[in-house]
Image (cartoon, rainbow, N blue to C red; front, side, top):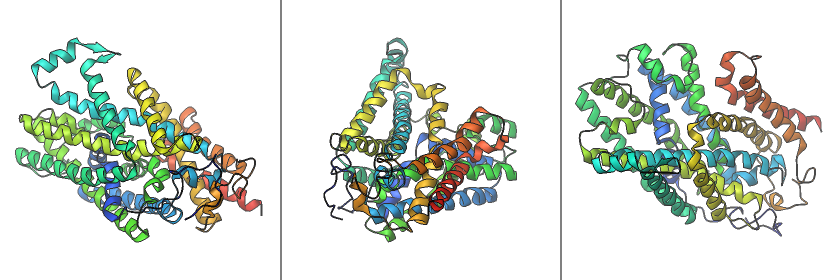
Length: 476
């Protein structure tokens, strides 16, 4: 749409409603292949698959979880198609024209942190390949800089620069990269699965892995209860849904470029319930076959590829894992941080400028590698605020405004969304109450039952969104 006299403090070319809409169903599908098919995504998928206890339980738990993800992504995705605006601009409708910077910066903090973590994971896959060479192994062990081996630093910077090149060329380049990377990762995953199934001589679903070994290997997945129990299956579904908490907020950064809602629906259908079930199945079968071959529960694919006798297969795997991790970084972290940071000073920071700032933050963080320390808990704590933010935004768009939004007013300082000097106090009251129950009480007190934390994101959505609705309705 054509904007009328947008305020410079709220507008730039990148934050304006999308005019070129070239993302068809295939490109939307590949948003999800890029988001899910990472080293961490594989680890979580394999863990959850094995904790289901049987194939039927897997279909039920992961299937239900994937359908819920599809529904939630459709909510925010449709808002992106209809308005054409990115997440921080959409947030102005509920949080205020300037208040929207608060949820945007929360999302940016999490994005910058995990951008560095994912870059380190991708570069680690390359390091694992290179040190198969005795000369590289010696260099890795003897040369150090910034608290890391020099080889690790070189690989990190190379991967960091590759991502920066992609994002600096704009969203159309992001689409083209995803359209190539998504299928490539799937092909490699199938090669890895077939290779190990043939080598093991068995096609099974993890029942032969001793339970104590399985629980020890998957303890970080956050799933309580015995594998296959009702408590475990409920936690599997909840963990799978919560894994996408960040994208529930900023999926409209991508859906705004979709050709129409029909293309979005088809892309989401194939990319979420269908792709997620298939991805978890392949990850679980591969991990089970690897256990039969190597006698270990190897939940990280780079651990499996490190044991390959074939240098060529190891090279192919390392490159694929690197591309996969680049994909999730661009989708889940880089694009979001670029828009979120640009939103703070639109007249001075473009999308490319925001992406550069996010990349530089990740580079500065690398010597300390906070993702390898307790800082991850802090970032996860900050990230738990995403539940209330999502609840507030969806209640505002669908229940309060009935899916109708004055897009032009999102770019006006003195318009409908000014509220109290650009801040909507009711939204921040609801956000604070939601965070108390989604983050503060389960993290710092024992007032709530132990299982509450597993479902904290859901409580955040319900309590934050519900409180916002009551506050808004009470004002009428």
